Amino acid sequence: MLRFFPRNRWLRRSLYLLLLVLLGGSTLFGYRYIVYYQSLAYEERMLAELSRIDPDWTWEKMIAQSPNLPDDHNGYLRLKALLSKYSANYSPVISMTTSLSPQSTSLALGPVPNNLPPLPARPRLADLDHPLLEYPEFKKEFDELLMEFRKQVNYPQGWMPIPRGEDLLKGTATPVSMFQQTLSWLNWDAQRQALMNAPELAILDLRAALAGAHAFGTPGVLYIQAISRKIEQNSVTTLEQILAWCTPSAQELLKLQDDLEKTLQQCPLVDGLRFERASNYQQMSQIAAAMSDGPALPGAASLNAFNRFLLNSRYPMYAPADRAHLLEDTTRAIELLKSNSPEIKAILMEWESEIEKMQESQKKGDGEFVNNMPPSQWLSSQSKLSYYAMIKSHFSWQANLRCGLGAIAAERFRQSNGRWPKNWEELVPQYLKEVPQDPWSDKPLRMRKTQEGLTIYSVGVNRVDDGGIPEVLNLKLDVGFRLFHPEKRKALP
Image (cartoon, rainbow, N blue to C red; front, side, top):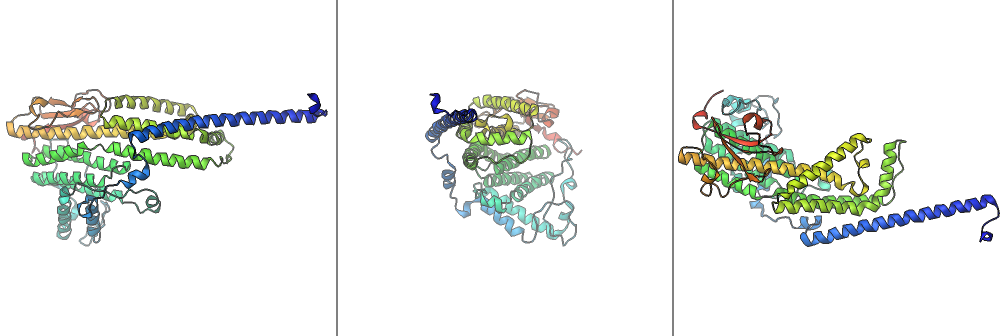
């Protein structure tokens, strides 16, 4: 056998080294091959399972199934037309420092003051009014705009073109902040109407804000949905102020209650997670395709740059498993949310524990999040961080609106019976279809009588009943709605 090897010692050693390199290279290639096809098999299993559960899960199919509302029934288009009409003469830019002259071209009234006295004390109207309202021409134009906004209650459905891709890159996406501020004007005016003893108009403002938030909150676009949910929660907060300052009629309250019930029948997070799952899967596929051409050499001689170089070189063989982890985690959360299963709390606790471990590992490491994650979960773990925050926000939204729903029913009961209800059973089914559940505890919302009236509250994100007292509600330890006795509703600070 030795006759096949060169007699020269250096040539022989070179040949041995070459054989070792070839053996190592073939072993590495075989390892990458096995890992890649195991990873690919995992992804194919998840794709088959997902096609069975949700056949229309892909991005292209969801876009193709966008609702086809007639333009004259599309609340989003109506809001957009109103803004276009009135912005011809007035700029909807918020500015509290605008020139206070009759020639001012700003339709801005600024944010709602946050220094209002604690409830049930009512502020003075001057605390909410803007100096521009002193000018008749401006006030006339603005009152006309508010009247048009109130008609939004007749257009609760809406669909906005999804601002993705080229629209976002070119800056032609829908001006989200404009819609957000426009709908916040309605909450601001609801406060003003309550102080002017016009509770029916105040309730109409809130109903219009809810309808606008619904029409504007395109299903699937999570950042737009988050704004819509915030508007809805602000409307419930404003309702608490209205009921502390005046007494709307039971008929108007019933209309608002119906609107809140319809809002709660939606599960916006399910649609949002479906869109995020599809779009993230598409983006992860594009990233893996770009990395398959080979990683770029590190530009700087640092451990962090070298680690990232190694990660980029290893990631393509783990990419299918990473996408499979994304599909599995997101689909699991979606199905539990759709079935309203209490197991979603266990998912939250599981994710919370994983996130804490990742963050702790990041602190002990070099500060690079991805360097402390296995390659098979590089991108999917980062999506999990955002999903965790989204689900927590969803439960807080449910708790807030359900407290508002229960408070309206309790106020209607008081107007009919001259006292507060003793328990939920007194409200169902005449004033409520069913007992509102606390999304954080999976038990009925708490109802507690106080010296001032009645408090309806959720245990909140810490899942501990902290009593629902004002100090606790201000700290957001509990989420609640305070109702006040009628004799306390007109007290000045």
